[in-house]
Amino acid sequence: MVQIGSGFKTKGVDRSLKALAALPANMKKHTRLFVIGQDDPKVFQLQSAALGLGDQVTFMKGRSDIPRFLLGADLLIHPAYNENTGTVLLEALVAGLPVLVSAVCGYAHYIAEADCGRVLDEPFDQVQLNRYLTDMLQDDAARGAWSRNGLAFADTADLYSMPQHAADVILAEHY
Image (cartoon, rainbow, N blue to C red; front, side, top):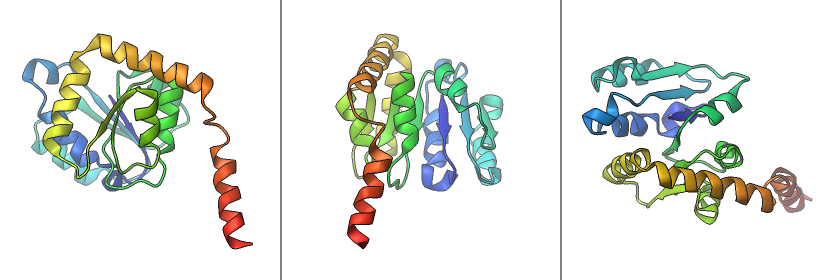
């Protein structure tokens, strides 16, 4: 699994670690989480150790080879506490990477529309995150379908003009 984004607290890294720790033992020992972003990971490294996750979690600073991680992972986990947009969700969708995301992320609706992963209910429930993560990691066929759905959606949806559209809206409000 991969979780990408700066501001580990806001992005819900603590929630991801709890979900990883809650996996069934046979699944947990074969699952790794790569957390990538510009933040001090110390508190989350301590949480990871306290949860007994050992070498299963790797924290990395921001890097230029993010597409490699998107293409090499089985799942993007993004249970953010709040998120205006969540551009990484679209990056995962375009890469065909299934997504598990909290509903508060601005672009979470694209995951639902594309049927390329699961969107958690609001208010957030850790038990639901744990269950969805287990289900998504166990179901190879569903992950394959979510991957295909994401790629198909990326081919047909206008995902690439959104930054320009956002800028137009902001400028229209101020001028």
